[in-house]
Image 1 (cartoon, rainbow, N blue to C red):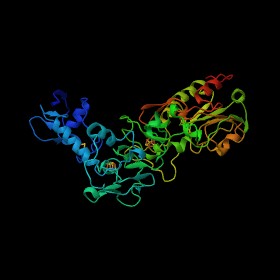
Image 2 (tube, protein in one colour):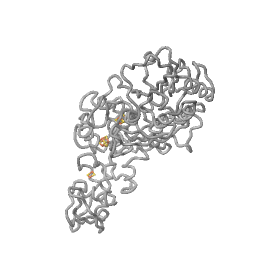
Image 3 (tube, helix red, strand yellow):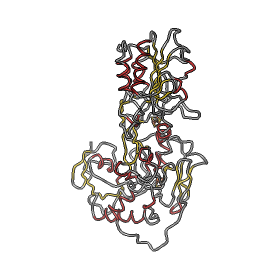
Image 4 (cartoon, helix red, strand yellow):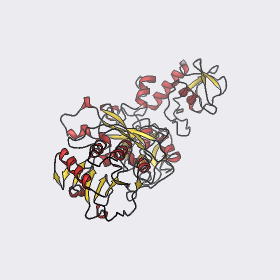
Length: 479
Ligand code: SF4
Ligand code: SF4
Ligand code: FES
């Protein structure tokens, strides 16, 4: 454990740490562009310079190993002058695009310009022009004028996603980030992480392009339900104080973008592209009313009808959701688990062409809470087989093939999205979705993660947790 001194303050460093890492761990800030905690050291941006005591030159901290008694300064006049030079150099050909750049508000170049430079360019030469809207993939557009050639994106595809989809061609001020071959980045299911790690606004999400200024948005912590990994994510949506009044009001309650929420126990700082596309899951047409045989009714009437069916049933079966939260599954078990013979289904199976699994994050089970559901209930056999005397089936969530249900059994269906089966059920309940309630999922390794609500649910939409508790008060409903 070498002890080093940063600006005269002792810092206990770990063996093999760089000065930059030791400084960060010890609460001392050294700026960086090209360094990233999960990537190899490139050492190309030179903003992280420090001065070692007794030396008349500066050196980069991201590639300087700690040694016992090392004394460095992060704010000497020489360091400040060098940082300013680096900023002058990096902004020499950088366009003044902040007013239209999606990265504005969370751009390291912008922040460092104010912190370490804050003076106009000294160059009188015209800026070097480069490609503005290069389509790097179906999902990502590249602005080469904004790129500072830090190579983070390239290293990500070589070291993390292992697609080797990106490289840098040409030299000097003609350097260009490019796909290694046509479609290479399209085939990388983790491609959008390069948008987050790009320290400037060079790599931009095409679905999010020019959609919102980030300071009008707010992130709600959540969990991706796309597979059993359960990656921690942030769901970004309009801040209530910046509600749009003139445009489509749905924009105030829709997902603007999804980004990773760093969780070392689950996903580190990454997520896959499916996690970015949660709007495609959550913003499908919703079921919003309870129904009896397709006829809309008040929620109380649906509850009364469901309770009558439960009371009358002699051999009820329940098929519960692997998308239900820990709380909902527990509520089902407590209220109805003793009354129903209960099985867990897979609500989602892999879509055609979807990556099944890999060594990074993606898991073959495309449901977020199979672990918690299976800890309580048996898996549904595939294809499902029902006893001949089954007279009531409660189906919760998607993925049930209704053709397999016993023809004469009554059906209670609890579902969130518009589906033809909703109207065929004897009793149908429209249930809230993950963005409308709080709860927890347990991932395939047993790690429990929380999600929070960000949008209100419809007036006739029910929370499954309270619905099950209500149905459990039916005669004989309790275990
Ligand atoms: S596109 Fe962004 S991440 Fe990639 S090299 Fe340029 S500045 Fe770095
Ligand atoms: S790896 Fe699974 S849980 Fe993580 S973002 Fe992708 S689909 Fe979602
Ligand atoms: S962060 Fe050290 S050279 Fe870029």
